[in-house]
Length: 271
Image 1 (cartoon, one colour):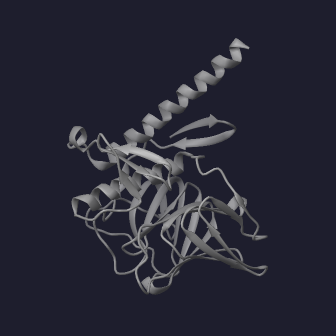
Image 2 (cartoon, rainbow, N blue to C red):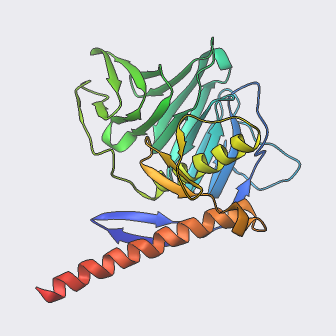
C-alpha cells in the first residue's frame, strides 16, 4: 500500500490482490458482498477469498474495512461501496425495505434501477436518508455530509425534512443545502467508478444497457455522475484477470498523481 500526500489530503492506492466474490450472482436479498480489496471484516472475521463461498451481510451483521475497500449488492439494481476505515451495519436486508446504518467512514451508493416495491434507506446518527431516484450518492461521516452527484434523496432528522438533488450537498445535522464541486475526486471515487464501468461492460455482454454510461467513440464510455471516461480494453486485456486490470488502473492513477506532484514541485523551484 502506498500513501500519497496530494493537495493536503492522504490518498491511499492499494496494490493488493483484489478478490472477486460471486461476481455474476444476483441475490434475492440485499447484502451479497461482490467485491473486496485489502483488509475487510465481516462481523469481526476477515473475509478470505473462496471460490465456493459467497459472503453475505445478514440482518444485524456489520462489514468493516481497514486498509481495504468493499462492495455490497443491494438487490439487482444498486450497490453500496465502502472506503477504507468504514463500518456499515445491515439493519434489514429485504428488498422492499433495505436498511443500512453507517457507523463511521465513507460510502458511495450507486442505484442503476429502482424496481417497483423496492426501497433503500441509509441511517447515520439521527438522520434517515431515503433514495428516491436512480443516481450516485456519497455519505461522509466525518463531515456529516450527503453529496448527490445525480438523483434525489429525502433526509429526515429531528430538525425536520429536506430534499436534495444532483449537484447539491446536505448537512445531516442542520439540513442546510449548498452546491459542491462534483468534479472533485479521490482514489475511492475512481475505484467505485471503475467497478461501475466493469459492471456496465458485463451488462452489455448480457444485452442490457445502463443509461448511466454513455457510449462514445473509440470504445470509450462516459459516466456523468462519476464525471469519468474509461476505455474498454477487453481486446488487449482479454487474458488478464479482472483483479489485475483493476490494480493496473490504480497503479496508473498513482503514477498520474506522482506526475502532478513533480509538476507542482517544479513550479515551486522556478519561483
